[in-house]
Length: 247
Picture 1 (cartoon, rainbow, N blue to C red):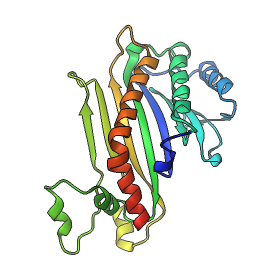
Picture 2 (cartoon, rainbow, N blue to C red; picture 1 turned 45 degrees about the horizontal axis):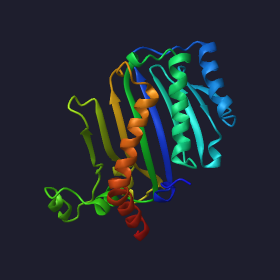
Picture 3 (cartoon, helix red, strand yellow; picture 1 turned 90 degrees about the horizontal axis):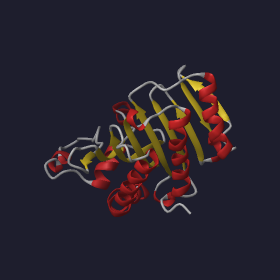
Picture 4 (tube, rainbow, N blue to C red; picture 1 turned 180 degrees about the horizontal axis):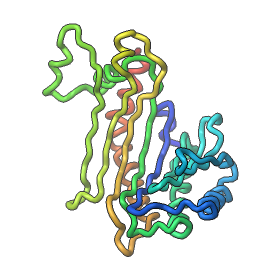
């Protein structure tokens, strides 16, 4: 059972491994890598090339929960939307990081950045920016700006990034992405769009000689899980859900 599934309309865990050097793009190499993923997850059957260089393997999105994986010019990515459990998503990401060094020649020395993202989407028809301001409030320094007569919040996407070590190689970022623009506010015609909350833990630079990619992502997972449980759920996700429910 996914303990985060009831907190938002959609929940996902994404992995991004950025490299300093370009990844191999040969037909045999790319297909062999995806075939190995498909052997573990047979329902990943949709394979295509995007933007001439980005290769994608994914499950049927119509099911509501699905896996996907990509090999790009300098990124290896993996994601699971609405996984049945957090561990199911992490199992997939660990497999990607086990395969990449051997099948895509991704050395731990070649790591530009390793990201693990916990994403929460809320479907809402209305001004996302105003909603975020009402649900989460603003800094005391800006509170009086919201009282300006006749004003409407056009852009409000709070974000904060923290370094978790002295050399700033391990960082975590909490951000909110709204999808309301000035035209929609002016016309009052709001489509049903998704408001997103992202918590991303990132490891910058080459890995130490005694650390594997799997060990590194497990550390990022602990960071994300602890922050979601101790802060994000109560201070961000629940206030957003309550405010949407009252609209």
